[in-house]
Image (cartoon, rainbow, N blue to C red):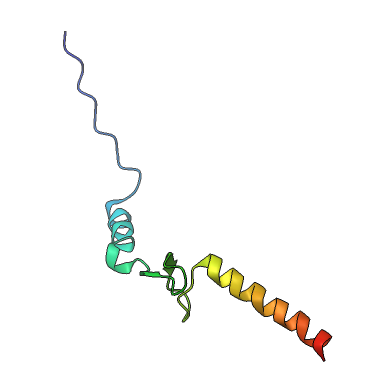
Length: 74
């Protein structure tokens, strides 16, 4: 016994939109990944500083601590 041939399903997404989506995620359009200048972890080059999210948080925390300590020393 042979199975009946299944009819080809109609595409849900038009081919034009599918092609645009493929071009949108092409490697040359992806964000470049760089290394953190402190720890060497991968980081997105979103700002001028090359810090990963951990080192950026530590930097912000250090700034806050310094701002809190300055009035006490004066």
